[in-house]
Amino acid sequence: MCQDGEWAELGGTLADLLAGPLDRARATIEAALPAALPGPAPHGPFLPPIDRQEIWAAGVTYLRSRDGRREESGHGPLYDHVYDSDRPEIFFKSSPWRVVGDRDPVGIRADSGWDVPEAEVGLVLNAAGDVFGYTLGNDMSSRSIEGLNPLYLPQAKIYDRSCAIGPAIVPSWAAGPGPFEIGLRVLRDGREAYAATASTAGMARSFADLAGWLFRALSFPAGVVLLTGTGVVPDADFTARPGDTIEIRCPELGMLTNGVVAVGCAPADADDG
Image (tube, rainbow, N blue to C red; front, top):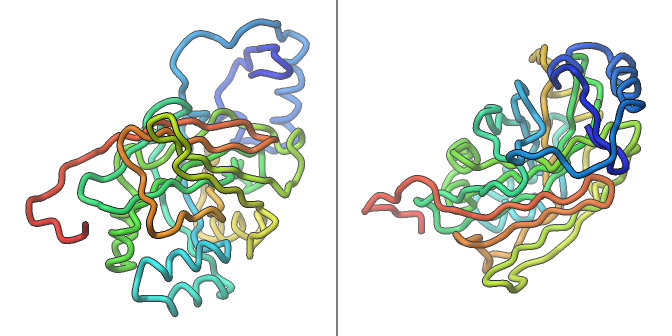
């Protein structure tokens, strides 16, 4: 745990914090602060700030996301309905062991020809569905695969290195309720290949609404991370490439940085680019 450059041991796991009520988790964190010591970050790999939490995601929560889905497919009315419907699109994104952290590469599928990062605010929810904190997420997506058929969404979204989380969790009482501005930048050969920003103020749905739908028929005893959708969707002439560097920034939540690598293999008769 870090605050203002000072580090402290919590003496427990994130799952322990998220299993109980929010006020108890806050008290545990605040009790550890007096023992915090100034100094550099602890040595070791940049692990994602999760332990037993599944990652779920919401889609088509911004108007730009709806338009992007329409651009990539011949199923525009379907995405209009998802955007306007009372029930949101919520899907499973990643098991915790598949998630990568800050400075660990994300992947693009070798059998896809059109791939983009999706910069998102992640809600870290406790077992009761309360917002314990916020983090940044990169919901890597194959637009070519989902564009072929919306039923291919699991293949477009769920594969090795398709989800990055980090660099840390900012408690909800420290970050405030938002809105949050999110910036996405892609560097290629040392130059900026793409950059854009969005604000969660542009979401068609609230954080509380999305969390409520996720918990309607699911329980998460160790908590869960819910990515809330992206308002930054590159135009059709952009695709991520191996060797790129992706930066996702938010003033309140820090910066998540990941290189890009190819994962899997492309069959000789691949027909989707």
